[in-house]
Image (tube, rainbow, N blue to C red; front, side, top):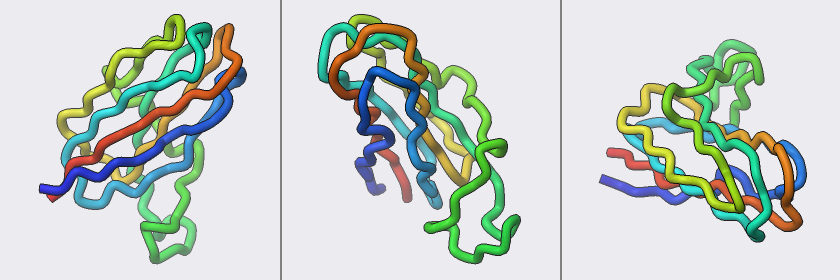
Length: 123
């Protein structure tokens, strides 16, 4: 088993942010934590999945393919409220998606950065 660390979002926490999609290949589970650079950021972090095949728009390389925004859907129970710069962990016990991305929806506060950090478990 391999555990691969990934940075899903590393950006300012004063506006809504959407991380770049990550090809998950042989990933069977994943966990995510939220780290804020200040104690005032508030909003929601959610993990979204897509199964859009890379051949949909003529690509043959799933590692460099970027699925269309419309192909991403919220993963059930993969949402975390960020309050006072802290958000609980998000665990995805079974990962049936080809691509994952994180979305931070800003609601108030913030004066620094937000990071969504993940660990992908694969065979």
